[in-house]
Length: 298
Ligand SMILES: Nc1ncnc2c1ncn2[C@@H]1O[C@H](COP(=O)(O)OP(=O)(O)OP(=O)(O)O)[C@@H](O)[C@H]1O
Image 1 (cartoon, helix red, strand yellow):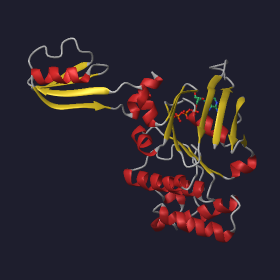
Image 2 (cartoon, rainbow, N blue to C red; image 1 turned 90 degrees about the vertical axis):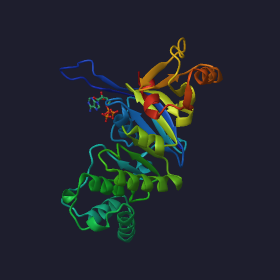
Image 3 (spheres, protein in one colour; image 1 turned 180 degrees about the vertical axis):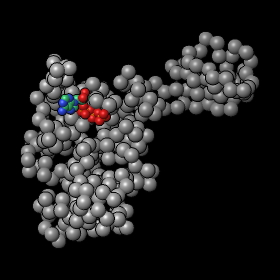
Image 4 (cartoon, rainbow, N blue to C red; image 1 turned 30 degrees about the vertical axis):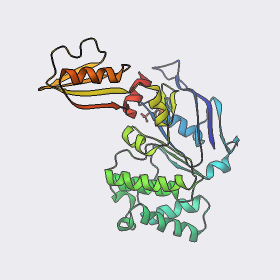
């Protein structure tokens, strides 16, 4: 299990902000084997800083990162796969060479690096591009290569900074499938993203960070449980004033009235709506991750 405990980090100030900037103000979360953890937050919330500390690129002022119950060390980190925010590929190197090269850097034999590169090129849909220099690839294909580099040494943990940004839906699916395979094999995966529908679809658990603090963490179902569900009723041609006194909002579209309400006696509201007009729809709607996110960071 990867445990991040009470990370704090202040960046030194410059002439414009002499007091410095608190980037992390006590971030804690855990990611278990086989768990996909979505790390979400507004721009500047502290996601990249957290991931850099996990990978040892930055040092925290205090707090701890531990893996398998022990403080994380250099050798552990070598077994992690990382996709940094500042993508780091050699632009003139060809795709196959590049993936093999990073495999060798991670300690694989020439033969193992070649085999792993060949597998990943196949899996990530890069066969046609395997002899192209990275600089000749589209952004999406460069991102596939970047993921291959993170995966080449069969990492024990994956830490990925916005791996899906700028990708078309096909590339998203290709990358997501590759990550899900690793995750199912027992690898904990952390990735940051602003694509909340994607996080909702892929992740077992989610951490919402705001101004350097973790404001909500848990499964999407847990986070939903905290929010009250919305009752939505569509009534055609209702009697005037039918929803008077009910909390929530009524939107009128033509002869349809759409009531969205919460914390009410749903059966009573249904009876009232049926008496008032023709009920076309009646259902309880769960909040999306986007709604949960907006509520958590408000
Ligand atoms: N090297 C640095 N020097 C000074 N301030 C920094 C440095 N790196 C990050 N920060 C500040 O720390 C805060 C957290 O930044 P961070 O990059 O971790 O946010 P983020 O959640 O990854 O944002 P985004 O979604 O935009 O990538 C921001 O206010 C940022 O300006």
